[in-house]
Structure formats: C-alpha cells, structure tokens
Length: 272
Image (cartoon, rainbow, N blue to C red):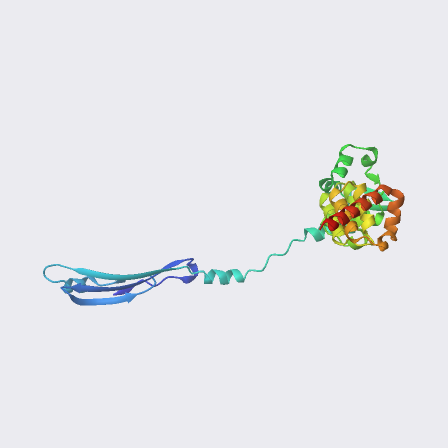
C-alpha cells in the first residue's frame, strides 16, 4: 500500500480537494475499504488483489466519491502582504517645487516689476492662450520675456500654482480675481472651480459683485443664480454694500434686471 502525498505546498496555487470512500467487494464480501482526502489515491498491491479475487475472476468495485474544490491562496496572500506599499505619486509636489523655486524656466513673465520664471511646455499644455502666444513667435516670446499688465502678481502666482499642480489655496480671498484670470487664459477647470466656490458662498455682501462678474464674462449660469438670490432675499443691506454701489455706477441696467426678477417672484407668490 502506498500514498502519493509528497507535494511541496509553497509551489501550489490551487489544488482539488477530494475524498474517496470505496470498498473492494468480491461476491458481496468486503475485503478492503478506505477513505483518503486531498485527491491523492491509495493503491492496493496487485498480489493482495489477485489473492482476493474469486475463481470466476469477477471483481465488483463500488465507489462513493465526495469531491470539493478548494483554492489555496493563503500562502500567496501572506507573501503579498510582505511586499512594501508602492510610494505615492510625487508629481504634483515636484512640479510645485519647480515653480516655487523659480528656477530652470525658459520664459520670464513680468508683472508690476515681479518676475516669474515658467516653462513654455507646461503653459502651452494648460492654456491655449499661452500656446498661441508662443507658437506665433511674437517679439516678446522670441526674447523669452512676456510682460502682463492686467493681472495682479499675487493672482498670477496663484494661477501658476494651479497650472502646475491643480491646487488652490486662496479661493476665499481671490476667487473673483482668479475667475477673471482663468477666463482670460482659457483654463476651464480653474474657472469652473472658482465659479462653484463663488456661487456656493453667495451672500448679501458678494451677490452684486458676482452679478457684475457674470455679466462681464457672459456667464449665464452665474448671472441666473445671482439674480435668483437677489430676487428671493433682497434687503436694504444689499443696497448698502460696496458691490451694489459699484454696480449702480458701472452697470445700472443690472439694477433694472434685478427689480424685474424681484417683481416676477412677488407675482408668482401672489398667484399662489
């Protein structure tokens, strides 16, 4: 009698687990029975079998087989657990360092006496306005020096940070200015984030300024929401804000639109 069980577990990815319960029976006489598991067969010696066979040379085998499939993965999973976790991506941090260190740039951007060194390839990839500027070989781009006069240096610095890293840290203080810069340089993701921040924080203090901003940049969604806010929550506090006073002077027709929106709301409420 022999059993085949000399198998190395460390090299096994899956095995078939089976149990064999069988009886060797000759003329209704059980001469040998056994049960084995894990799929390794137990074999009877030929001589013992020959002696047990009756003269008629008749052999009856009755088998009862219970088989279960088992996937052995524990060893492999344990080995995987020993592997160190891969390091997280450092691309954002590396690009942030690249722009904050103000080194190795191939174009200088001058704003109110401040110089920002940047990289044409990154600016071109992120902004079609910069791409057109560099592709058309204007005199200033040939000299690798661009002067910008209509953006505050702090705002442009934050815009550059976003261009390189997709990070924003000053939305609470310069969302409106960043929105304007994003629209100018056609950076839609930055513009969208600024718009969301502005609308999410509409208040009596900011709504008039937001309405003017929407009008200047033809942002119909922002304008609609600002008018809705004014028509539903209009108070004397709004008319006393600096934003409202500026709107009266620079965009007086927006006051008319606000009044119309307010009357529409009151008309609707009256019908109800």
